[in-house]
Image (cartoon, rainbow, N blue to C red):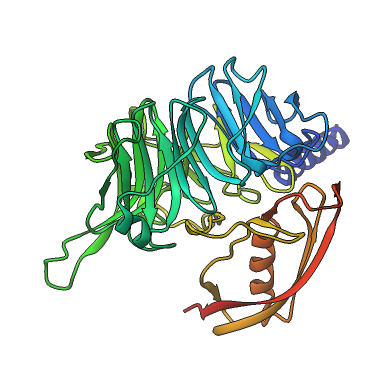
Amino acid sequence: MKKIFAVLALCVFICVISSAQAPAWHTGNPGFHPLAITSRGDSFWICGPNESIASSLNGSEWTIHHRAPSAGAMLFGIEFFSASFGYAYGTGGTVLFTNDGGDSWETKHFGSDTILLASFSDPTHGLVRTAAALSYLDGGNELHPIAQPEDTLKRFPFTPFLVALSPSKMTVVLSEGPYSESGFLATVDGGKSWSFYDPPSTGIKDLLRVDGKYWATGHEVVGKDKPGGGYGVPMATFSEDGAHWTRTTNEIHPCHWENCGICNTEGCLASGTLLIDFFHQATKYSAIPEGALTAKWASIGQTICTLNQSITCASLGTAANVEASPDVSMPKVQTSPPMGTKPATGTLRCVSCSLEPVFVDQKAQGRVTVHITLQVGTDGTVEAATVEKSPSDTLTKTIHDQMVSWLFEPPSKDGHPIRVKNESDITVNVIRSK
């Protein structure tokens, strides 16, 4: 009998250990390198090289809905405006539209420049951002550059977010640069006129469309007129026109740690391990397992999926303590170049290749030059990256992790796809952590 109990105890012990060591995240294989992810109803949707578009109910088993018969565009943005209408966009001015919930997709081209950001309310109304310009569609197939107000566009050349709310209502966040002043450029007449609203003492972290309204998140400074100056508080506000905004009455206190951002219709990240949804009724909190989360994520119910070199999914948990300071920082977001940037030339043409403006490290400080090597595949994604001559292992890893998410237009020579190896020295700004 003692032996039986001993065996049972051993089995229980092994099961507990196995459960504790089981990975929280599991990796799926959609058959291509996914570059963007979103959710619609009860399914995940991804897109990537060669105009590939696929969906899944669980993040593990994928159905291909569209793929170019030959070398097609790289798609790095996909969204659904409604249950039936959606769009994906990418290189060569390519936009794919669906009007049947993703079952079929129609390819259109708006010029030949790579589309960095886009938002559509239907196939003939929306916003399009290329390296050179910010444009809109007003019911036809021709893009119209937004040129007014000219002084505002010159002062705020970055466009981190843009949203088409309806054929007549569209809004763009204009910014001076990362972590700088920003405001809302909006139209309510389909692009005939544009007005700019610069909310005082406010930093905008995200802008998106939820249930027919604009939602913006970030922070604002209050009490500036009091002794000792002001202090920052989290902000979540909604609008129907991009000019008049109402603060939510839902609880957003956890956003004070890192300012809630990297949002979609299912909520925002309050930290690298906390998802908060204040868009709907009572605020809902979910815990995200550590280890895999990137800035490209989507969720359905209690499942979250994120993109790295492939697609990785996990179950959301119950947030035990939403007041605790997060131990895992927010994922890093790739930023688009300022308006007016000339399209890239040469064999290796960058689409999204940004690094943090300032790195924090325990060993280094000042301007640091490192040597990087990139291996870019035929689909324009980074297959391998190395960082040399860095003063610390931490800085090496941080730069490397951001480099592997860089995107390039698919390289070619004489009309044939090729792999490209590139070496260069880059200089980054580093401050020593306290």
